[in-house]
Image (cartoon, rainbow, N blue to C red; front, side, top):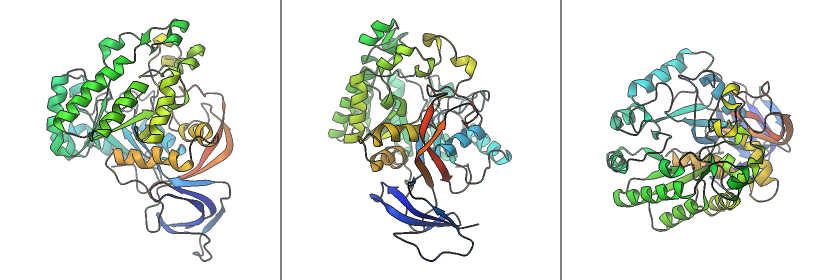
Length: 430
């Protein structure tokens, strides 16, 4: 394997708190040296001038969807992996809501076997796919799965990716999950309160004539879930936090010492209800985009530590599925290839966040929420890295996107910032 020397690259590593110019030598899938200047390297080394480029640890996505199995017209595993690598992600955790859902250990074994047998998936330096095991059979929220068997099979944690309204069932789930030591992710949403709402309730929902989903649909459900956590003590990750009130509830829970972490999605940081004047169905999300005060609270919550991580929640749909009226569109958008450049441009370029803060929320904290060791840039560590050019521009088009779907509000638009290369140790099997 040829060695690579990245000369005078801007190294960003939130684990060690490093942000500096350095030379980085990579050999045999490992980082061999990180020094101010490296003067000696193997004869077969490829030397690259990396001035102006960013080298950070590989990005980690807490939760996203894969079309395969069951919805291969939206996304296959190979296209998902290609999209992840193109966006700098070295680890992606897949939600179990597929067809069939991942609610039995045999489903996980089948996914791993298919990856091993498909040469299109075993790409060199391919990202790792991890799988959430379903909490309930058929992710229907009615009967718990064989949790211990799924844990033994190797799921990264447990999540339905859907709201669970049966609090008695949730109580039993948290009691059974406590000794298993796996991550548990819950989405707080009261479906009876949210009703048929397609955007966050407020002045804008009235102005645009769209059915509103009230803030209390999230905060009331979250308050109930926090009561369960306080009573039982099982650590829980709260996914898809989207409102100011929820950020406050999480903040208060952490202040009381509850074992909770929380994430929001990247789209909720970049958009709010005022952006829905276009009625773009690619902005139809679940939970819906927040009001401006919600967006501001999410950004502040990440800066202050109330929220821990940014998730991508990559949700592919075909052109035909998404090209309908806003209220009729299925909720979700792709994001693995777009999140890093757009967040960098919006938050870092404008001076609101430091590069270390962005990488903390996209790499280190998501790994910790998954109970994994975060990627680290240090000698003798695996080369789990992303090389990013914040000044390279490109156009998000179907022919340039690696994802099989193109349901994004940035389709046809020029993007500033692009991943140059992603290093992933091993192959895409957990």
